[in-house]
Image: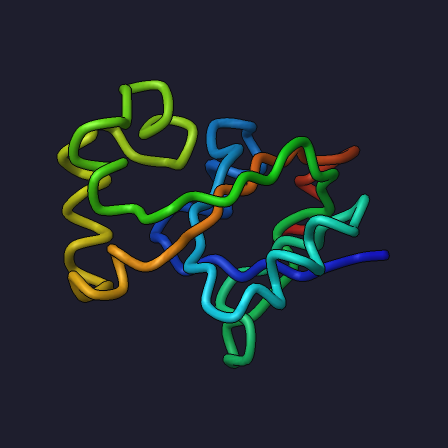
Length: 128
Protein backbone atom coordinates (compact mmCIF):
# COMPACT_ATOMS: atom_id res chain seq x y z
CA UNK A 1 0.00 0.00 0.00
CA UNK A 2 1.29 3.45 -0.96
CA UNK A 3 0.37 6.63 0.89
CA UNK A 4 1.09 10.15 -0.41
CA UNK A 5 2.64 12.83 1.79
CA UNK A 6 2.70 16.43 0.61
CA UNK A 7 5.50 18.95 1.30
CA UNK A 8 5.52 22.74 0.94
CA UNK A 9 8.53 23.69 3.10
CA UNK A 10 10.91 25.65 0.83
CA UNK A 11 13.87 23.46 -0.08
CA UNK A 12 12.14 20.26 1.03
CA UNK A 13 12.54 18.39 -2.28
CA UNK A 14 16.31 18.88 -2.34
CA UNK A 15 16.66 18.04 1.37
CA UNK A 16 14.56 14.89 0.94
CA UNK A 17 16.45 13.69 -2.13
CA UNK A 18 19.81 14.30 -0.45
CA UNK A 19 18.74 12.42 2.70
CA UNK A 20 18.99 15.49 4.96
CA UNK A 21 15.23 15.67 5.66
CA UNK A 22 14.04 12.31 6.97
CA UNK A 23 11.13 13.30 9.22
CA UNK A 24 7.90 15.23 8.98
CA UNK A 25 5.53 16.40 11.71
CA UNK A 26 1.82 16.40 10.89
CA UNK A 27 -1.40 17.37 12.71
CA UNK A 28 -3.22 14.23 13.85
CA UNK A 29 -6.71 15.67 13.11
CA UNK A 30 -9.14 12.72 12.99
CA UNK A 31 -6.37 10.12 12.75
CA UNK A 32 -7.24 8.91 9.24
CA UNK A 33 -3.91 9.77 7.63
CA UNK A 34 -2.01 8.46 10.68
CA UNK A 35 -3.77 5.10 10.33
CA UNK A 36 -3.13 4.98 6.57
CA UNK A 37 0.58 5.64 7.05
CA UNK A 38 0.80 3.16 9.94
CA UNK A 39 -0.46 0.40 7.61
CA UNK A 40 1.70 1.48 4.65
CA UNK A 41 5.08 0.08 3.76
CA UNK A 42 5.65 2.63 1.04
CA UNK A 43 5.26 6.39 0.86
CA UNK A 44 5.06 8.71 -2.12
CA UNK A 45 6.50 12.13 -1.32
CA UNK A 46 5.09 15.04 -3.33
CA UNK A 47 5.83 18.73 -3.73
CA UNK A 48 2.77 21.02 -3.57
CA UNK A 49 0.14 18.39 -4.27
CA UNK A 50 -3.09 19.62 -5.88
CA UNK A 51 -1.35 22.57 -7.56
CA UNK A 52 0.11 23.17 -11.02
CA UNK A 53 3.57 22.99 -9.39
CA UNK A 54 2.99 19.42 -8.14
CA UNK A 55 5.55 16.70 -8.79
CA UNK A 56 6.71 13.54 -7.10
CA UNK A 57 9.82 14.13 -5.00
CA UNK A 58 10.61 10.48 -4.29
CA UNK A 59 9.34 7.11 -3.18
CA UNK A 60 10.21 6.26 0.40
CA UNK A 61 9.78 3.52 2.94
CA UNK A 62 8.25 4.09 6.34
CA UNK A 63 10.86 3.76 9.08
CA UNK A 64 8.77 4.86 12.07
CA UNK A 65 5.58 6.71 12.93
CA UNK A 66 4.84 8.07 16.39
CA UNK A 67 1.77 9.83 17.76
CA UNK A 68 2.53 12.90 19.88
CA UNK A 69 0.22 14.48 22.48
CA UNK A 70 0.90 17.95 21.01
CA UNK A 71 3.67 19.87 19.28
CA UNK A 72 3.86 23.12 21.29
CA UNK A 73 5.77 21.83 24.31
CA UNK A 74 7.74 19.32 22.23
CA UNK A 75 9.17 22.02 19.97
CA UNK A 76 9.74 24.50 22.79
CA UNK A 77 11.28 22.12 25.32
CA UNK A 78 11.78 18.65 23.87
CA UNK A 79 13.38 19.12 20.46
CA UNK A 80 17.11 18.73 20.16
CA UNK A 81 19.16 19.98 17.22
CA UNK A 82 19.15 16.55 15.57
CA UNK A 83 15.34 16.48 15.49
CA UNK A 84 15.17 19.99 14.01
CA UNK A 85 17.88 19.15 11.46
CA UNK A 86 16.17 15.87 10.44
CA UNK A 87 12.99 17.85 9.78
CA UNK A 88 14.85 20.23 7.47
CA UNK A 89 15.56 23.13 9.83
CA UNK A 90 18.92 24.62 10.79
CA UNK A 91 17.95 25.32 14.40
CA UNK A 92 15.22 24.78 16.97
CA UNK A 93 14.34 28.48 16.63
CA UNK A 94 13.89 28.13 12.86
CA UNK A 95 11.70 25.06 13.39
CA UNK A 96 9.55 26.88 15.95
CA UNK A 97 9.29 29.92 13.66
CA UNK A 98 7.91 27.77 10.84
CA UNK A 99 5.26 26.06 12.97
CA UNK A 100 4.35 29.28 14.79
CA UNK A 101 3.79 31.02 11.43
CA UNK A 102 1.70 28.25 9.86
CA UNK A 103 -0.36 26.95 12.80
CA UNK A 104 -2.42 28.47 15.60
CA UNK A 105 -1.71 27.84 19.27
CA UNK A 106 -4.82 25.64 19.40
CA UNK A 107 -3.53 23.52 16.49
CA UNK A 108 -0.11 23.20 18.09
CA UNK A 109 -1.64 21.96 21.33
CA UNK A 110 -3.76 19.30 19.55
CA UNK A 111 -2.29 15.82 18.89
CA UNK A 112 0.34 15.46 16.12
CA UNK A 113 2.42 12.64 14.71
CA UNK A 114 5.96 12.30 13.42
CA UNK A 115 6.86 10.21 10.37
CA UNK A 116 10.43 9.04 9.79
CA UNK A 117 11.13 7.81 6.26
CA UNK A 118 13.98 6.60 4.07
CA UNK A 119 14.12 7.54 0.38
CA UNK A 120 14.26 4.57 -1.98
CA UNK A 121 16.47 4.14 -5.03
CA UNK A 122 17.44 7.05 -7.22
CA UNK A 123 15.51 10.03 -5.89
CA UNK A 124 17.05 12.28 -8.57
CA UNK A 125 14.98 10.43 -11.17
CA UNK A 126 11.89 12.16 -9.75
CA UNK A 127 13.09 15.72 -10.35
CA UNK A 128 10.66 17.90 -12.33
